[in-house]
Image (tube, rainbow, N blue to C red):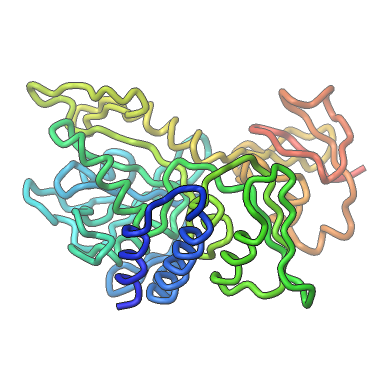
Length: 354
């Protein structure tokens, strides 16, 4: 098999500055071959019977972890779902959705079958479960206090399936062109330009402008920025069953400690999910003197501009509205006039009119 041969060549080739170019091309070839093999698996929201889940609400979160770590119990505690609960592995054989409402935001939470070692090779429903994870906005990675080492193992399984948890998307932009071959703009002088060109060609680029806007010496990160099947996702790590006798806290301070049965840590978990999703609430006003509608906020990403808000209301309004008046903590003064390029902030009040 081609993939196995490429992997072996990568392992057998000593890595140093002289072999960096060759290693990069091999890793690009591996990325292309795995993308071709995965096909539509990595393009959408699930696959296979019982795994194609229609998203609803303002964001989608998946509970991913080992079998029997309490995902179903946690789902039931956070939402209105009734996921089957049992004390044996693989209780959940499909995807069970629930809806959590927090700060006026509707967050869909999906309880997935447990991920086991070998999931990236389709062991234990692995590929279908991973395809649902890829389509979500955030991963709650779960284990119990007895199996803390599995955090790393689960992250490796997802990494092997091109899901990057908690990382920052490479600042690499690719603009396809009609001609001119491959041009590289690398102001930080990170890589030999011919290596970047050869990696891009291996990834099926022919005419493109590639711009690298960060300082890095990682060829893997370069390939992540160019490959089409990489998914960078925010993650919240949860250690469950902390009410059990003998339970001990992990050394990793980034983990949240919960007990769904006792209600321990649930409010902290909700707040962390909200924070990691990076959402903001925008309240609309019907006039400059009216009270903003805080019952039905518009939910958009934190880095969005007011033009995104207008488009969410009506695409036809985009050509008619040029400015807005805003209120809130980040407004210079009440009713400040701004352009539609202005960035949104949480609990912004806005009036689109004169």
